[in-house]
Length: 374
Length: 210
Image (tube, each protein chain N blue to C red):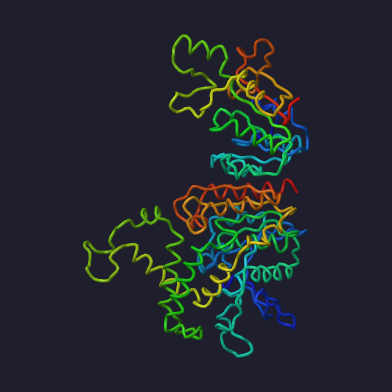
């Protein structure tokens, strides 16, 4: 099976993308995938926004694609007859600006130099990512999004979409997310970035494709993984069980299963992700703040017709429920139509990606309901 | 309640409450359960409804049937709406489970122009007789719990409630005493000796004294 992705390139003919940092940038390519059929009046579009290390492959397209490219990151949610039903909706997902799964990011070739951008790539924001997605949506002739859905950094993009283009979004589902990164989130991200930047192979971002800062990136991923899990989930999954041994080694090897798991996740990540992309995307999420003192951007939602469904998970300590409650309060204060559900789950932040009947019925029912009062 | 049917097959007290609500109004339903009242009001009276429900499963059910519901307890934050933001606040068969019912009613009079409260009447003759004759906490179809596991932590009678309303800045606009079992769809209005004969009381209140 060939590449299921489509590519859209823009900002290349003297009309660069104006970024929040003040720079103009182009050309920009976004890799995207679609599922289902666009109906004649283009009113059945669901835009899915992926999390920090995600890509456009939300679900497999058919059996051959499943064989070739594996299941998507939300395979249980998206497909024919599933929670986000592709028999009914036209689903669109693009890889975010700054990432490395087909869209323009720091590992892309700078046409001016013929080399990868590295740190010459501009520091992009969640707002910039959404602006780029808007250009893609426009290029497809779509003027209304029936649903905008995403978790984590994807949830930030959901909120940003509603603020940047309020007239376009009918139903919004921000999952396991926040209006702004807490000091805790920024702290973990900084440790992840330092792990990369202190790896000698990072070379101030000028490493080559065949010699990346593997160790730093692997450590960064290990830190990330810890924040995606929970105390309960780690206890259940690993406890203090030893890895392929009966006794402690009294050496600095991986004694425990949890160590071996993290090492495995770290090493695996190195093969599919770019270290500089991690720096850029974590920075974008750290900069995200819809509740700035003085002029909170969230207040721009006053009077919006968008319906919101906010979902949090009990064991998510990266974006704990209280942050979703703050979001709900802010939406309420602005007179928005908002529903909120806290789902009991012991898997931590990762819970939004895992198959869960309650999550599926909430999302499908909410999308249904948003249709009936149109 | 079946989704195809509306007001007619709801719990009897909800049918009465629904009949008191003007079409097109804004309604807050506290402890909305599986959303039967809000669903019927939305379908048949084009009401803009918001529900509060602390049980995750019930709140999720409401949201999946298209209602706007918050999976929350009634605390200060959750009830922070502007003055008279809602035309009606509904507290149906929930008051007896609230820790600070007096504060809650005062808060609801702030955020709702009218509030509708229904609760089981603990002075029904069977309840009185059970306590008098057996000496143990009354148990029946609409109070099916033991003293140690009942969610009904407040013992309220119709008379108690009226006395309470006289002590606050509120007026009873409408009241009705009913006889029906907890989940019954049919019931009747009690005119004679409601303190003794009604299983439920429903009150429509407004801020201010008459």
